[in-house]
Amino acid sequence: MIKTVLTLSAILFAFAAASVAAQTFIKTTGDWSAFKDDSGKSPSCYIASAPKKETGNYKRRGDTFVLISHRPGESAWDVFELRAGYAYKKGSRVTLVIDGQKFGLFTQQNAAWAKDAKTDRALARAMIRGSKMIVTGTSARGTTTVDTYSLRGFTAAYKTIGRDCGVK
Image (tube, rainbow, N blue to C red):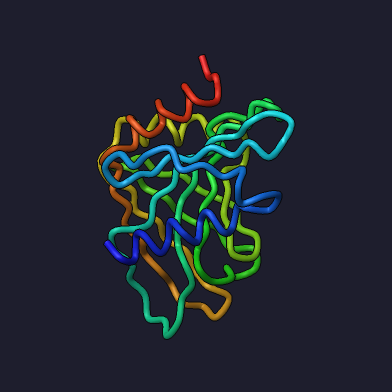
Protein backbone atom coordinates (compact mmCIF):
# COMPACT_ATOMS: atom_id res chain seq x y z
CA MET A 1 0.00 0.00 0.00
CA ILE A 2 2.79 2.44 0.93
CA LYS A 3 4.64 1.58 -2.32
CA THR A 4 1.46 2.23 -4.31
CA VAL A 5 0.96 5.64 -2.67
CA LEU A 6 4.62 6.53 -3.26
CA THR A 7 4.43 5.39 -6.88
CA LEU A 8 1.26 7.38 -7.51
CA SER A 9 2.98 10.40 -5.98
CA ALA A 10 5.90 9.82 -8.36
CA ILE A 11 3.46 9.67 -11.27
CA LEU A 12 2.01 13.04 -10.35
CA PHE A 13 5.51 14.48 -10.00
CA ALA A 14 6.64 13.01 -13.32
CA PHE A 15 3.75 14.55 -15.20
CA ALA A 16 3.74 17.94 -13.51
CA ALA A 17 5.74 19.60 -16.28
CA ALA A 18 3.62 22.72 -16.54
CA SER A 19 2.02 23.18 -13.16
CA VAL A 20 1.39 21.00 -10.14
CA ALA A 21 -1.87 22.86 -9.60
CA ALA A 22 -3.07 21.67 -13.03
CA GLN A 23 -2.77 18.01 -11.97
CA THR A 24 -5.97 16.76 -10.36
CA PHE A 25 -6.45 13.39 -8.74
CA ILE A 26 -9.94 12.17 -9.66
CA LYS A 27 -10.30 8.85 -7.83
CA THR A 28 -8.93 5.36 -7.26
CA THR A 29 -10.92 2.38 -8.46
CA GLY A 30 -9.50 -0.99 -7.47
CA ASP A 31 -5.80 -0.92 -8.33
CA TRP A 32 -6.04 2.01 -10.79
CA SER A 33 -6.06 5.76 -10.14
CA ALA A 34 -7.47 8.43 -12.45
CA PHE A 35 -6.00 11.92 -12.98
CA LYS A 36 -6.77 15.00 -15.05
CA ASP A 37 -4.32 17.63 -16.30
CA ASP A 38 -5.71 21.04 -17.24
CA SER A 39 -2.34 22.68 -18.00
CA GLY A 40 -2.60 22.59 -21.80
CA LYS A 41 -4.97 24.08 -24.35
CA SER A 42 -7.29 21.15 -23.75
CA PRO A 43 -7.40 18.76 -20.80
CA SER A 44 -5.69 15.40 -20.82
CA CYS A 45 -6.62 12.50 -18.59
CA TYR A 46 -4.80 9.37 -17.57
CA ILE A 47 -5.07 6.33 -15.36
CA ALA A 48 -2.12 4.72 -13.67
CA SER A 49 -1.16 1.67 -11.66
CA ALA A 50 1.93 0.19 -10.08
CA PRO A 51 2.75 -3.52 -10.31
CA LYS A 52 1.52 -5.85 -7.58
CA LYS A 53 4.67 -7.96 -7.97
CA GLU A 54 8.14 -7.07 -9.29
CA THR A 55 10.76 -9.76 -9.90
CA GLY A 56 14.30 -9.62 -11.22
CA ASN A 57 17.86 -9.83 -9.96
CA TYR A 58 18.46 -6.11 -9.52
CA LYS A 59 20.00 -4.12 -6.67
CA ARG A 60 18.17 -0.87 -7.23
CA ARG A 61 15.15 0.14 -9.25
CA GLY A 62 13.11 3.31 -9.56
CA ASP A 63 9.35 3.67 -9.64
CA THR A 64 7.53 1.40 -12.06
CA PHE A 65 4.07 2.14 -13.44
CA VAL A 66 1.73 1.94 -16.42
CA LEU A 67 -0.31 4.84 -17.80
CA ILE A 68 -3.18 4.96 -20.26
CA SER A 69 -3.96 8.51 -21.39
CA HIS A 70 -6.47 10.44 -23.47
CA ARG A 71 -5.17 13.66 -25.03
CA PRO A 72 -8.10 15.26 -26.88
CA GLY A 73 -6.03 18.26 -28.01
CA GLU A 74 -3.74 15.85 -29.90
CA SER A 75 -6.57 13.53 -31.02
CA ALA A 76 -4.77 10.78 -29.11
CA TRP A 77 -6.77 8.16 -27.21
CA ASP A 78 -5.78 5.07 -25.21
CA VAL A 79 -2.07 5.99 -25.31
CA PHE A 80 -0.21 3.23 -23.46
CA GLU A 81 3.04 4.05 -21.65
CA LEU A 82 5.15 1.92 -19.36
CA ARG A 83 7.82 3.35 -17.05
CA ALA A 84 10.28 0.65 -16.03
CA GLY A 85 12.22 2.22 -13.17
CA TYR A 86 15.47 1.54 -15.07
CA ALA A 87 16.96 2.15 -18.53
CA TYR A 88 16.04 -0.53 -21.05
CA LYS A 89 18.65 -2.36 -23.08
CA LYS A 90 19.08 -0.39 -26.32
CA GLY A 91 16.93 -1.81 -29.10
CA SER A 92 15.14 -4.24 -26.79
CA ARG A 93 11.43 -4.97 -26.84
CA VAL A 94 9.07 -5.39 -23.92
CA THR A 95 6.65 -8.30 -23.92
CA LEU A 96 3.28 -7.72 -22.36
CA VAL A 97 0.77 -10.53 -21.80
CA ILE A 98 -2.83 -9.86 -20.79
CA ASP A 99 -4.68 -13.07 -19.93
CA GLY A 100 -2.80 -14.97 -22.67
CA GLN A 101 -2.93 -12.22 -25.33
CA LYS A 102 0.62 -11.11 -26.22
CA PHE A 103 1.79 -7.62 -27.24
CA GLY A 104 5.23 -6.21 -28.09
CA LEU A 105 6.31 -2.71 -27.10
CA PHE A 106 9.27 -0.66 -28.31
CA THR A 107 11.60 0.90 -25.76
CA GLN A 108 13.47 4.15 -25.34
CA GLN A 109 15.49 4.94 -22.22
CA ASN A 110 13.23 4.02 -19.27
CA ALA A 111 9.89 3.83 -21.11
CA ALA A 112 8.02 1.54 -23.50
CA TRP A 113 5.13 2.24 -25.86
CA ALA A 114 2.89 0.55 -28.41
CA LYS A 115 3.98 0.97 -32.03
CA ASP A 116 0.79 2.74 -33.14
CA ALA A 117 -2.70 3.92 -32.18
CA LYS A 118 -4.26 0.63 -33.33
CA THR A 119 -2.09 -1.29 -30.86
CA ASP A 120 -2.88 1.26 -28.12
CA ARG A 121 -6.60 0.59 -28.70
CA ALA A 122 -6.06 -3.19 -28.70
CA LEU A 123 -4.14 -2.95 -25.42
CA ALA A 124 -6.91 -0.89 -23.79
CA ARG A 125 -9.57 -3.38 -24.97
CA ALA A 126 -7.55 -6.33 -23.67
CA MET A 127 -7.06 -4.57 -20.33
CA ILE A 128 -10.83 -3.96 -20.07
CA ARG A 129 -11.49 -7.68 -20.57
CA GLY A 130 -8.49 -8.93 -18.60
CA SER A 131 -7.67 -9.55 -14.96
CA LYS A 132 -3.86 -9.62 -14.99
CA MET A 133 -1.05 -8.13 -17.07
CA ILE A 134 2.51 -9.48 -17.06
CA VAL A 135 5.31 -7.27 -18.38
CA THR A 136 8.78 -8.63 -19.21
CA GLY A 137 11.68 -6.32 -20.02
CA THR A 138 15.49 -6.26 -20.08
CA SER A 139 17.58 -3.54 -18.47
CA ALA A 140 20.64 -1.89 -20.01
CA ARG A 141 22.68 -4.13 -17.68
CA GLY A 142 21.01 -7.27 -19.06
CA THR A 143 18.73 -7.93 -16.08
CA THR A 144 15.37 -9.45 -17.00
CA THR A 145 12.44 -8.13 -14.99
CA VAL A 146 8.91 -9.49 -14.76
CA ASP A 147 6.21 -7.23 -13.34
CA THR A 148 2.65 -8.34 -12.64
CA TYR A 149 -0.15 -5.77 -12.72
CA SER A 150 -3.69 -6.25 -11.48
CA LEU A 151 -6.39 -5.02 -13.82
CA ARG A 152 -8.95 -4.85 -11.01
CA GLY A 153 -10.68 -1.49 -11.31
CA PHE A 154 -9.19 -0.73 -14.74
CA THR A 155 -12.54 -0.56 -16.56
CA ALA A 156 -14.14 1.83 -14.06
CA ALA A 157 -11.04 4.08 -14.02
CA TYR A 158 -10.92 3.99 -17.83
CA LYS A 159 -14.58 5.06 -18.03
CA THR A 160 -13.85 7.88 -15.57
CA ILE A 161 -11.15 9.44 -17.75
CA GLY A 162 -13.31 8.94 -20.82
CA ARG A 163 -16.07 10.95 -19.17
CA ASP A 164 -13.73 13.64 -17.80
CA CYS A 165 -11.94 14.09 -21.14
CA GLY A 166 -15.04 13.93 -23.32
CA VAL A 167 -14.44 10.58 -25.02
CA LYS A 168 -17.62 9.31 -26.68
